[in-house]
Amino acid sequence: MHRHPSRRTRTIRRGFTLVEVIVIVTVLALLMTVVATRLTGVFGRGQSEIARSQAAKISQAYTLYMIDVAASPEDNFDLNVLTMRPDEGGGPGGPYLPKKTDVIDPWGNEFIVVVPGVENYDFDILSLGGDGAPGGEQANADVTQ
Image 1 (cartoon, rainbow, N blue to C red):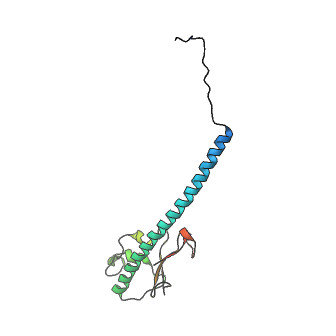
Image 2 (image 1 turned 60 degrees about the horizontal axis):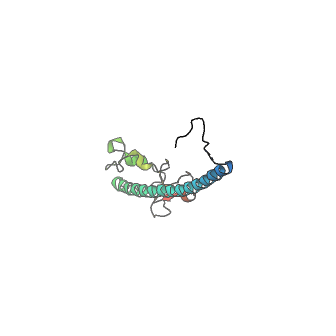
Image 3 (image 1 turned 30 degrees about the vertical axis):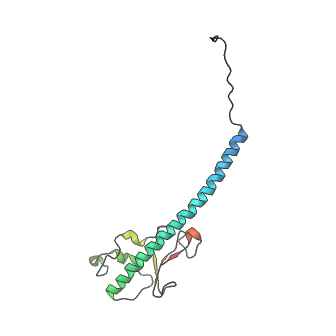
């Protein structure tokens, strides 16, 4: 069957109503809020685990340094000494840590030596967490080794 060119067929186009668009945007916003909240918690826990691992590594390096120089733990010890070669001012067996960034926590702050330790007898290696202040909650909590 042949259509006549002068006749136009009307196509019915249905778009979204304003209410439907608002509902979709609201549902997406709620979904993104839930996902972002979950991811923030996971990311914060991951950083805490990295900080705990780094603190353990620093603790071992600091112990080796103290044995090499026959010293006892010092409060507010400059951990950067652990990254220096002997000719740069580090200990005789240095560097005890391979990279300068090994003394920086995942949040960009330097680890701290606390003497006497709270968790350990001689000393603790402490990261103040994401907020950079003592205390904190969940992702911002302090990490001690």
